[in-house]
Length: 55
Image (tube, rainbow, N blue to C red; front, top):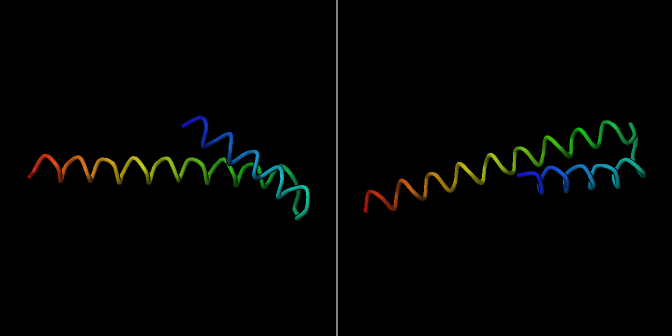
């Protein structure tokens, strides 16, 4: 999970260098995006695990 958050923050820093409103907003957006990716991946994994148990 931490890797995705750090990657999101780094991508946010890179985007914030070129695009307004600046670094802070894009780092926050990157962190939120990293959290959402982790959440979705866990949800997909749990769904697959439940489907495997039913079979």
